Image (tube, rainbow, N blue to C red; front, side, top):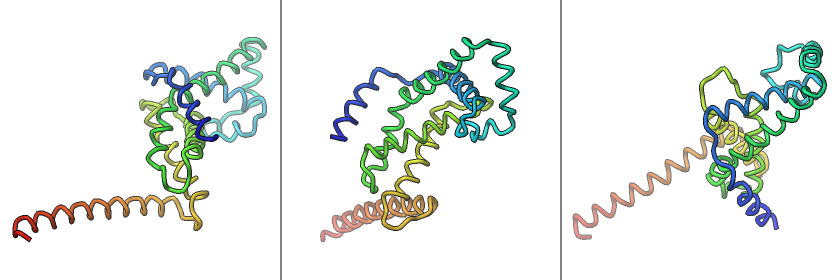
Length: 195
C-alpha cells in the first residue's frame, strides 16, 4: 500500500523538470518572502528561521501592509507557498536519488523520501540568496543530513551520532573496496603461478 502511494507520487512528479538557476532564484525569493510574511503574522516556526533572526516582525508587517495593501499582501503570501511547493516538486527527483543511496540502512524508501522532503524544506528556509550557488547543490546537503539523522534515530537499535554513522559508512565502503582489490590480487597471483 505504502509503495503504491510512493509509485504514484513518483509518477505525478515526472512532469516537473529541474529548474534553471534563474528560475530557482526567483522561486526562492518568492518562497522566502512568503516565509517572512508568515513569520511577521506570528508563525513561531517561521520566526525561528535563522535568516530572520535580526528582523523586527511587527515593523515588517506594518510596512508590508502599508506599502502593498491587504490584497497584494495576501497574494505575496499565497505566491510564497506556491513557490515553496514548486521547489519541492521540481527537486523531488533529487530527494529520490539521495534516498536510494541510503536504502537498506534501516528505513524503507517512503520513510527516506519523507525525511528527504523535510531536508529540502529546511534548505528552502535556510538558503542564502546572497551566495552564488545552485539551490539543488545547497539542498543536497540538507536532504542528506535529514536522511542520515533519521537513519540514526529510527533505523538503529543503538543511537549513534551523525559523525559515527558517517564513519561507519566510510569504513564499510573501504572494507568493500579492499575485499574487491584483494580478490583481484589473489586471482592474479593464482593465474601467474598456475594455482
